[in-house]
Length: 222
Image 1 (tube, rainbow, N blue to C red):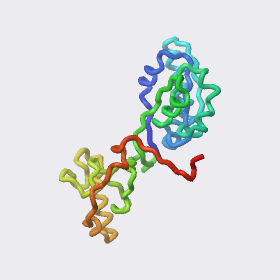
Image 2: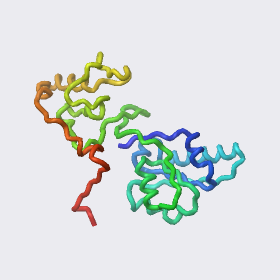
Image 3: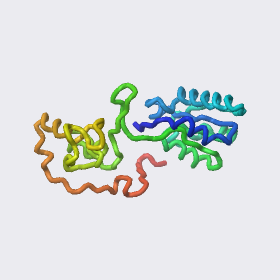
Image 4: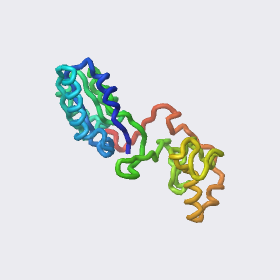
């Protein structure tokens, strides 16, 4: 899933300081799962904005609404009858949400309420970890089901660098060296020799290096 975190409240307040009627727009997708952009968080942010305004004797109206998804035009259309009622909209979806809203409602003032971090999953309660870099050509089957592109600080595909030590990455002792994990796993599986097989250089054209990407499924196009 896409993992995000709420922007600092001071930053959000600064963004909307000149607006008096604000809509906080949540999303029931990934940001709900990571407890940053769902209906509960929309209500909390709306309340926080009201409290902050009260402290400065500023009169504002803040309401909240949560869409099923903000990355799908049919759901973004659900707010078409209310969007013009607000001076500013704070989207607490991932970075796709405010862009879809801005494209659908070009005259609306849309602000991002969260910072999109990475694609990953929950490794513990309240803790998420990156697992995918969206390179466009998945190769985890070559590495024991683990991704060195996303989980190696240098995205190395040919083994660990010289800076790793005792299973830790050179950038921080809090970061595991994924190549240490890969080698240990492949050894346990009796497949270590597979890492010695020749692989041609990876083509990054399917990654972000090839420019903004899109996917077309012709059988689904109407």
